[in-house]
Image 1 (spheres, rainbow, N blue to C red):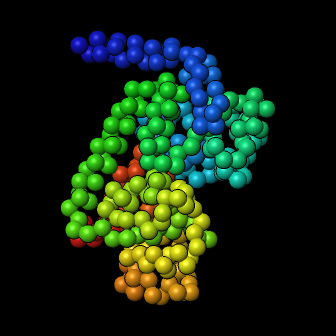
Image 2: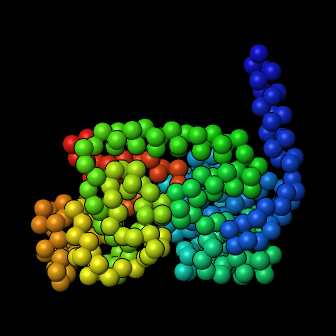
Image 3: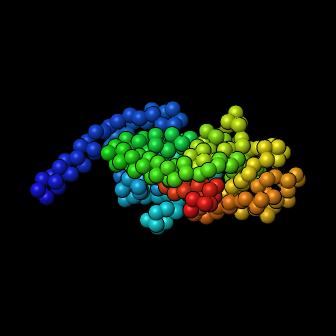
Length: 287
């Protein structure tokens, strides 16, 4: 029986690699033809490196961006810059079959000129998380692993959402990414997580997914809870008019930095853990 299983596994593995070349549309709208399943990959987004490892494809990564730090395996890989400071020469020197890039910036142009194939990914909405997992599965020839990962993450999210459903209230929430201040709209993946955690985002969706907001708007909306993913809590309390906000008066702040920030800010396979942080913040009685 063991021999039969090994044979079937080997056959499925071979078939996955045999379904090439294939042409897929990336999130820049480009038709990208991939001649063979990529074996040397550079990921320029932390969510992509995490997703690849969650699909048991960590071994294909030969380089990552400066912010990829999970799982531990990726910390031992060469770092080749970030969105605003990519090291083109270092990426090319790794001789990748494929580089996953952000839709922002123009890294893809320089790499394509250097003869390196790129595939652009955008993950901003909640649905984008699962769409991107499936796309990576197709790009890498790992469709089965991609579908299993989608099922696992959705199950984890459902379990946390079920816990949140026991909450007796739905507090209004202001979520701040940085002190500029930038926030999150209801239709962003973080905005959807706030709703799943039984919170109410104070921002209207018309402002967009990740809008820069007026501090006066926050005062006007008067949220019950303020969530920060930057270390600026002390300064926030000093902003004009903010002393009268309900969250400030009641001391209802949640500040997430480091790994907590990563769990909330990365639209990847650990999204359920980020949701758990939000539930604990908004409904401490459910801990």
